[in-house]
Length: 147
Image (cartoon, rainbow, N blue to C red; front, side, top):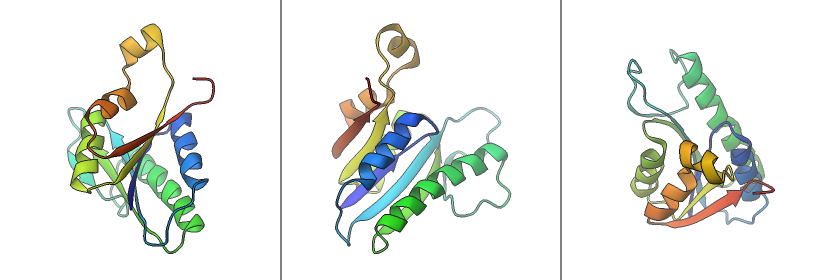
C-alpha cells in the first residue's frame, strides 16, 4: 500500500502523524511525507523540491524540509522495513496535494483537519474539505480533538 501523508507545521498534522503511527502497516508498504509551501512571487522554486538536499535552501525551505524529514524519521523508526520518501512542494496547497496523490499513485492520503467552523472556515478555507471533494484515492482526515 502507498500511504501519502500531507503535513504542515500545525497541531492537526501532528495528530495525523500520531494516528498513522498508531496503526499497523505491512512491511512492504510505502510512505511519502509531503508539505506544501504556498507559491509567492519572488519564490523561484516552483514545482517540487526533494527535501533531502537542503544545501542552498532559503530558511523557510529548510524548515519545510526539516518538517517532512522529522515525520519521515518517526515513520522509519516505527517501520524500518518500509520505504519512506519526502518532498517539499510549492504552490496551491489543495492542488499540490491532489496532484501528488495522483502522480505518486497513492492508495491512501492522510491529512489533519484544523476543525474550523463558521466564519473562520469561510475566510480561512478548508484544505481537507477541498481535498475530500476531489481526491481519487482513499482519504483519512484526522480531526483535531474537540472539532
